[in-house]
Image (cartoon, rainbow, N blue to C red; front, side, top):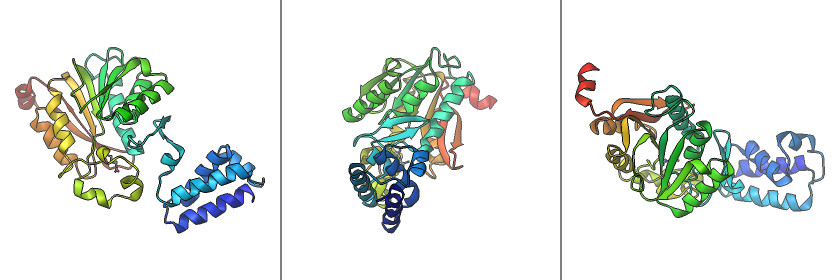
Length: 299
Ligand code: GLN
């Protein structure tokens, strides 16, 4: 069978299985199996598919047809232009989450994060529930002088995150610590970020099977109202955020108001909601202030 015929057959198989993007997924898996890039897949389409790679390709296509996401099949996912290894203990990084990194990096670059220069000089950041390490590693890569601590309750996730930090040359600037949210932290931070679980428990069963069956449920399940993790995080920040320090969290659809309210009630100031690339509310930020009364009366 020719390579292009194999890709066409795969697209048909994935389409019949109800996959959203059958052509794209078939091409990405084929490029991996045949060891070529997108251009090579086209220029070499007329070649006979070698038997080993063809069998590997067909096995990958069957996994995709059974609902496994492409990133899980490849074992890696791109985030902010970097490749991240995944494991069973890590959420697959989403393009939506890039907005969180963008907001945090922009704040540092604009000089509004206490103690931090534009490249993160002097910055101490924390990433809570780091998973694959995508957020912490991207921050360290984009702010080449920043240092941070990344926490996770899962030892397996931390091992994957540490390997990802190593792979991108930032392992000397991120420390990985096991525990819940802020528990493993000590000292003070100019920036705290997190993409915590935020799906309401009752909504988990209705997620697409790509998510439901392949992302770890403890990275998704935000409790009865989806806000459990935000309560834990917001409650702990007073003892860890520097004056004017920034807390930035990812939120789910429709959570802008409820998470903003949690921030405000905890005394965080300048609370704001930011959109992702799709224009949906995706990030909530707030700043620690010890002069709440003054901020309130002057603002
Ligand atoms: N964005 C993920 C989803 O929609 C959820 C990630 C999370 O709970 N932090 O499946």
